[in-house]
Image (tube, rainbow, N blue to C red; front, side, top):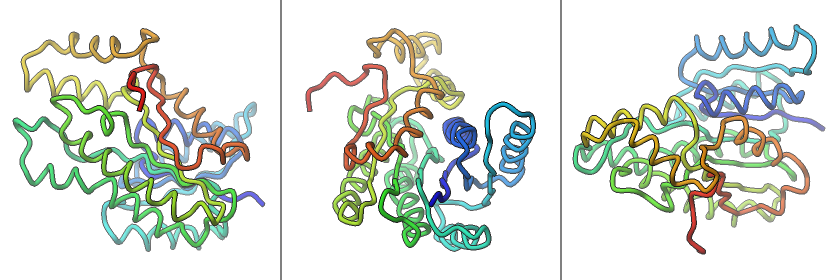
Length: 263
């Protein structure tokens, strides 16, 4: 029995890329984001692509919700009920942080928000779909390599992603016996508009030219280029293969060789 793939942050660069790939592969997608217009645009894009022939596109069900708010749990559940969904094949937390900045300039209240945002949002997602997770379902979160190897200007993503990695490890120990596998992705720098914005912000804070900061991202890889959204989306889609259960509980680096430590 085929269920639905739930994507939080579906209108962001990474979430939208995953939604497009899964839809192209014939999988139904529940797309969650705060902006109704952007969700409708994504749904219309994939609907038009499906009518155009070629790749087989499944339907996209939009759900307007702020995953950082407890009300999102009821909103997601209600949308799943209305769509007649009884099984969630994959639930992906891909929402980005709403704050940023280095320790030098970041307000303490923003750091407090960053520290808890992804963990709280992921728990909201779990509570929204938990009764529809069955044997073979995948519960996935995008953390990022800064949770493992933070830099001097990475206060928000470093703190938030470290907490999320810990939470996902806890969830893996709780859900594995049910046949639900838990996966944490650590992409590292990916070629996205969001990363460009990080580079602009760091440049404004430090005075270092933006081009130099961008080249620093690239130089950390051992491939000489940043991973693409298409490559990340491909990996997410492979998690739906039965054999992907072997990755349960793991933190998977998708960074083009940025991480070099042994542990």
